[in-house]
Amino acid sequence: MTRAAAGGLTQHGAHAREILISLKAAANDQLDIPILGEEKIRTVCKAFNIPEEGRSLKEVANDLADVLLEDLSRALPGEYKTITALAPAERREVWKNLDILPISAYNEAFDAYHRTCVGTDGDWESNMKQFLRCGLAFTFTGVVAADIATDALFGQGGRRTSKVNIGALKKGYVNIAVHGHLPTLVSQICTIGASEEYLEKAKAIGAKGIQFYGICCSGLSSMYRYENVIPLCNAIGAELVLGTGALDCWVADVQDVYPAIMDVARCFNTKVITTSDAARLPGAEHIGYDHHHTNLSETKALARKILDRALEAHELRKGMPVFIPPYEITAEVGFSPESTVKHYGSFKPLAEALKSGKVRGIVNVVGCSNPRVIYEKATVDIVDTLIKNGCIILTNGCASFPLMKLGYCNTDAIKKCSPALQEFLGDDQPPVWHVGECVDNARSSGIFAGIAGELGLNLPQMPFAMSSPEWSNEKGIDASLGFRLMGINSYHCVEPPTQGSDAVTKWLKEDTKDILGSVMYVNTDPAKVAEKILADIDAKRAALGWAEVK
Image 1 (cartoon, rainbow, N blue to C red):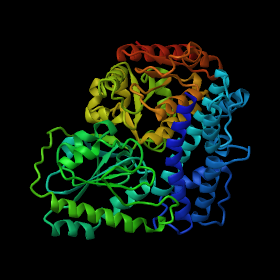
Image 2: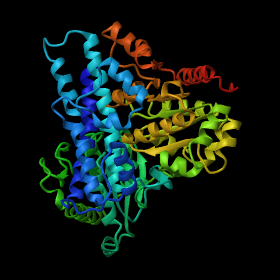
Image 3: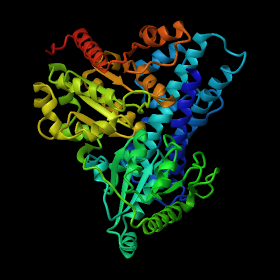
Image 4: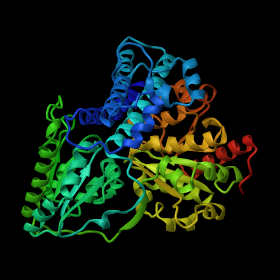
């Protein structure tokens, strides 16, 4: 488990590193893309006490990147500045007393692998302490820092209506899918590909235009920032998209890009391009950054080269059979703490709705899909039960795709909610609020913190929950742990891989109640998981003396 937590830390940590390098390069004119998130940068810099007066946006952005990079890679023990600046004071005290404050993301992954090597740390409790340190570094660098840097460089985007599902694929276009997690090169592919120049290039070869689609988090990061990106599916469903024969080009970066897509792509002559030095596919063409990022300044040229390859692929694939299933729907996406305040004026209406019982609780439903269980079923079943019983759902990442595809992110889904929740949501808010890609768990945490702050309460007191029904890899372990460290229970339909130790299993599921104020609940039956979430939310409400929800 400690090695898994270290693995998850390196996955999201590598994502954060890529965005932080891009932000710093843009601030120093080494990357020719604009810094769009001035408001985010100014807000965050106040929390970090980074001076702004009389300084340019690029100077301030450079300092912000440096602070976040220091937390990523600090070797000598020192203050983890992101935790000091952004974590609740009550939680910081808990972590300090447990001696689990991390030194840096690099250090905790390094230490986790060292102490779990042959003949080193044989004390399971000591290993679990390092497990918790990895969880904190994952949360505040892999998630929070990545989210800050992404919003700082590319802007926060905003709420918008997006088409989703495989039926949204279009015939007659140069169809390009972006798949993975890293937004820098994707941002330029989407921006340049939407230009008049490339529209004319597409028309010159007989296409109607260029259309972009998102697989996994690259699509989710793009869909609320760019007009022309349609999210189709999560990583496990990628081969189903290729199987339509509609895609001309598949652009992959890192994580959740499985080698089997090459077998399916070959059947349809779909061009596959990899863009990350850390993630290659046999038989794919590689067009991307080198190991030392010496060609970061060539980002726009790389994007143009990829777009030209897609145009070539479209011409070569003319006459290829295409079958697009007739399943398409729209989803409301781009929710965030800022959009919540903009819609309601403040967090007060949401806090009052919770207190009165119009909203029973708020549950963050996330996590990668797991091929060892029925695809996406547990996620849908749990959410269906929760909204019928008055809960608002926050979602992101792979778990969000079935909720988008089946209409839960559409305002029509209000009909599925309890009468009180229907009244609160009105006719313009869906019951499932899509906050974005998996690092956008920071947005869910921000909504939780905003409501708790409005009520003057700590997070462990609130009727909140986190569920990753199908969690399936190292990132999922850390994502769940991140919320547990905040004092919010986690709920799952897949057991953690701890059956070799009764002590560790008991500690993970029960004993963390005493040290973190949260527990893990696992049941392979989604109905039982939903029942448990509701029961625990009601217990939190009762402890606060809030209205009972029937």
